[in-house]
Length: 201
Image (cartoon, rainbow, N blue to C red; front, side, top):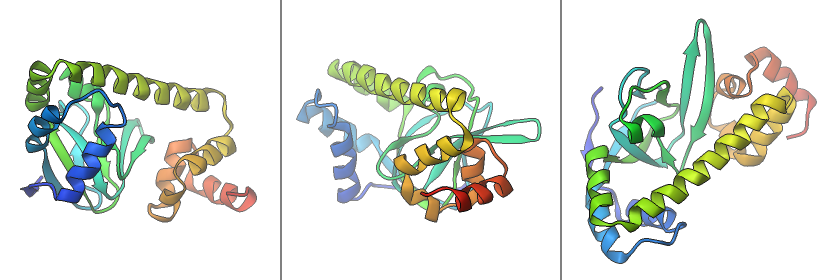
């Protein structure tokens, strides 16, 4: 996979810092050390950034485009999560544990992401102990989101899953093919089409 690395723009760096600062425990010195570790990559539509069995080497931050993490079982494909500006992205458990990924990470549209390597992130944690607190809070938020998603998968009807996705991320409905939304809520595209015509979004 050919990618072109470059320096994040001032706008991208500012957006990254704003999102990191939603957990306000880090100093200005931390950001001086953190920002040089990020590089920007431009990705093509349908480009696979991480594949099953590969160990994730980067934590990503989306500045343009939409991506998804998905898994394949037999002839079935399930979308686990969508990511879009401005949020962290990638196969986070594979990245933090440095173990083979159970998921694929794919760009659904052309886009641009910032990324930082595992080695650089660990060096930041060693230099700035407060970063471990930030990671703990961030991962607690991720776990909370996963539990909400698990509740939806376990208890919601397909229509309720669709309504929940629309409430959370209405903009993606106009940006990606319906088949990916269908795989997120666990129905086939034909069923999704009927649902879209029968419920109010």
